[in-house]
Length: 261
Image (cartoon, rainbow, N blue to C red; front, side, top):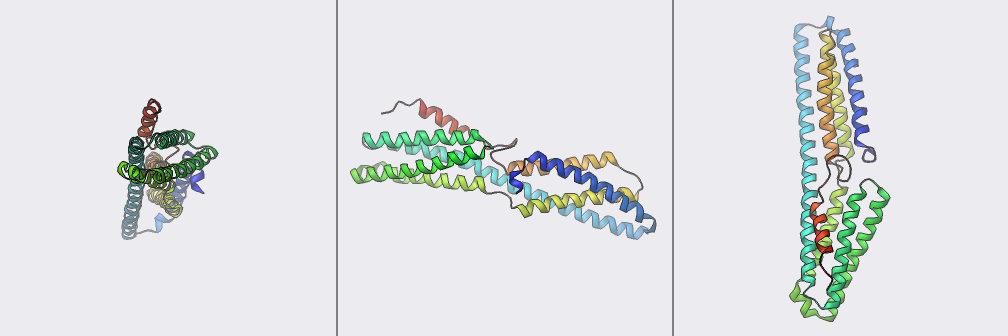
């Protein structure tokens, strides 16, 4: 559900809720502070410090998890680009018919991958491109099978089978990586955690009987920015931080400049 919402809407909503939590905590702290002893306030501050540390730890782990996913997606783009280039070259060791067919499939595959990246958040276009990608991969394997039936020895020497298999495997892995996000319960936990933090910050201000609005805004802004980056890292085809497709764009340009045999 959250994956369907624009990142900025989620972050703005959380920021508004955090300000509301600040005010709610302030009123609660101001109402109860006269009955507090110095010892109870010390214990309260200790608990608050522990909660703040736990929230920081949760945000840190979530940031690390999303950056790891981003790095994996980035590496898969380069790995698959290299695999397609290798398969394209090894196709040249086959007979002319098989070579022309396989290279044509690979050229179109790279074109569709670039088109899918440029489609961004257009879900219909992304799904259409994914269907064509699946069809092209099936055609690629079918072309390799046809070549193997005609000239098995030549296919064996060209190593086209492992090369095409790697293209197919990496395509599946890449599709899975793009769909692998932080679980929504974890995202809800992070949001609830920052709201609790804002509530406790407001409570501390209420104990001092003064609204520290500038400190509230600064703290809320930092938490909101961290949440924004975590969410943005976790959305490879939308937002500010997107997986770099330069290897495929360059491969598309280079294959387009190669004359057909």
